[in-house]
Length: 439
Ligand SMILES: [Mn+2]
Figure 1 (cartoon, rainbow, N blue to C red):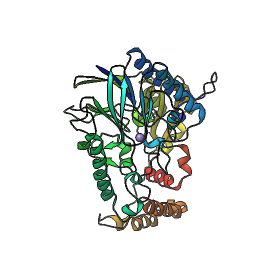
Figure 2 (figure 1 turned 45 degrees about the vertical axis):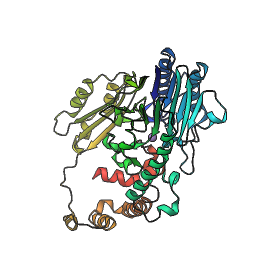
Figure 3 (figure 1 turned 90 degrees about the horizontal axis):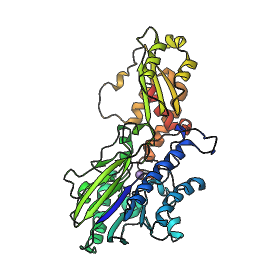
Figure 4 (figure 1 turned 135 degrees about the vertical axis):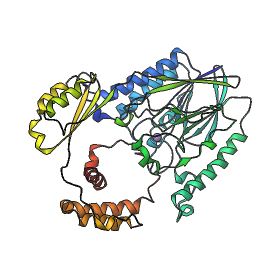
């Protein structure tokens, strides 16, 4: 029997805005959380012990993590080297440079020749010898348009045409790998991709269009005993027939609030004579809690907010308090008392949102939903918004940029997640987004 631990989307070094500096170590507490959670996965791999560890990609938020974060990651995986457990590190979109090939942040393991470590940055088959026999692992790293076609070839094609052609080409290459497989040996496909029926958080729908989406039928092949995926942060099995299981283990820690309600964990897989059993093991990760309350109709908004906070156990959690109120209620809010009420949280943010009393302005020219040019629509809209006059030029420029770059940069590897950084506020596109949210 072959035992495998499958984990993915570690994203070590992200989400620092949800942490604080630990005065004893000088490190961000969210880095410490991620390291502790990763160490729990490695503990399990060692205590079983498993025969193989598969990492589904996205080790860090980008391809060039600072050395202390690289080291925190390496010192955990080092324990697998010491225990002589073979490990495959697959390259995800966050591990690639936005230009060019390969996984910049993970290639160091190949360069060092770490025994038993394989870096999956190309589509190829690795025959891995484990304590309990050999296993085929086909690695399929995050694909970009440039992996399988030249810029000239894709010129003038629509996104869906490019997606279609890429899928066809991938199918041919994958078929080539499959034909060379030794059918006597169990086979695993390890891939970092977006499958066409993965369930995403609503916040990620926008990211979908940016990438390359593969049909599930490419993965649910008889020749695979198990399909180990990475990329989507929500744990799920895409194949309801379970033959083979097509599993996203999800991220190991909450990367942002969109993962507030998701279980985080890893998957243990057993392959025995063609029989495959897998089980998701949740990890005890830090709680994220959104407390949202509308106090606009309350006579005593302060008490209503405090009551809403008291309903939740926020000890050591990452908390965001969002309360909606009318502008004339602002004087009734005692902010220091809110800080006091949130003190037991690990970290927290307070976001008051004003509810406008005015009816929303309507733009008569836009009332018919006919095929109006988006730039023209924005211009008409802005003509009607005196209050946006100051930034209307900026918004138009940013929109123009968006329209012209959308086609070119759709396969940009990094930033496929929903994480938004505070820097986004300086970015005109984000400024538009912010404005639109306020509308
Ligand atoms: Mn990814």
